[in-house]
Image (cartoon, rainbow, N blue to C red):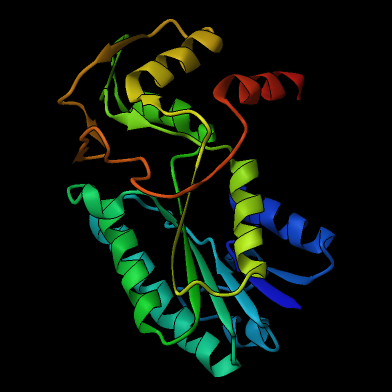
Length: 250
């Protein structure tokens, strides 16, 4: 089966491409550096020819509110009609758990817009909503840092390893379209500030983590359940400590 992975050279994309190739599929790792650009439309027709499945793992180079919204809307309006013309039978997109529950977060609003385009496209689809990646905890801590203090919300957090996200995205692509949302998350659920503190301690970072209910998450106010699944979810098995150990070994 031919599968096109948009964003196929990124963190999740490169891992997903490798998994699908190991499973015996013809996989196109599509990205601007490979001549396929969903913003300009360059290379889309050629890349999608004969594809049965498209996995959209594209991401905006800017997180500024207007820019990120324009990215996902422009990308979707170019990609989805091109898929329809090519006869693609399953569109899979990676999204984020809880995007509708944090409307002040501009990136989340853009992902909601992306999902609406997918739902209206007429192409059978599966949206995989993931919690935050373990790989991003350091950057999240940096975003909440002032001086030597990291202010973090006590809202619940359930991070997942990129390795497991890639496996679950590949599984979704090879299954029948759900025409709905599948949620995935890490194995541990704990207050956000506690997980950030554990991470910083493990990497010998001297910054102090402060529990702050008013701390924003990239511009959005977090409630207790803003970032975690509220219902059924497929859970990974890699804990924060196991992930940190694997990085040390690498």
